[in-house]
Image (cartoon, rainbow, N blue to C red; front, side, top):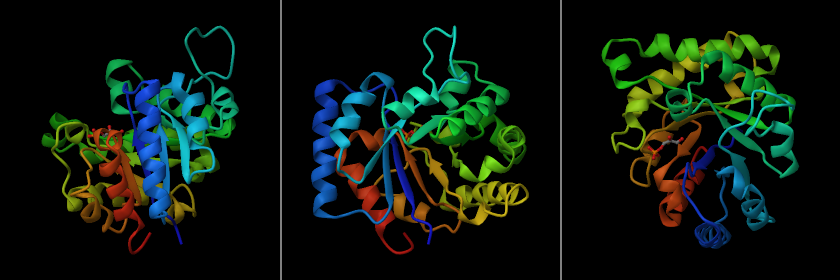
Length: 253
Ligand code: 13P
């Protein structure tokens, strides 16, 4: 049976001291109650080595928040999938709405990053999601389908190796969560789109992200096509993140 995945996205937060304290608390919590789901933390690039060391021997996997669309060469400031792999990175978030919005990442760039990530042996967590204006204009389905189609088109049969994250932009960091029904509706669309591309779609992981917290996690996770969460703010507080992991470890995990 497919195990759920709970991934923390620390975004632009942390320090050597903060990271050490947070990971110690997470490790202690997971030692007391072993998770029945997969767990990962996606940390800022400079801390990959530190956090990788802190996670050794724990059930928590290491993740990055981005990956280059290039394998190597004259691309100042970029970090390749092979470099991430060197540091034991298992997952890389790709195409987060904050990167699409503030760094101009197009569907084509996101698709290329996914390709590089897979080639480098790092599982991409591919984010899709509509803005509030797009939702209100009835464009949600068109937007998320276009975003995922670019990734499917560029990656062919390898598409079954990705993780998808539905993150409605209006729910990120706003405290305004999609209802379980709203999220499920989009997850079902995404699953159907994946099914047309690969027979392995039912086994693929589709995460929900956007103000997911200890209080709403269980309801969101009860939906048939929600296979886990991509957690921002609540992943920076050990008790909250542990509570979400506990919810994901209950029935159906
Ligand atoms: P919040 O959980 O802070 O809303 O962030 C969600 C997110 O963007 C995870 O990638």
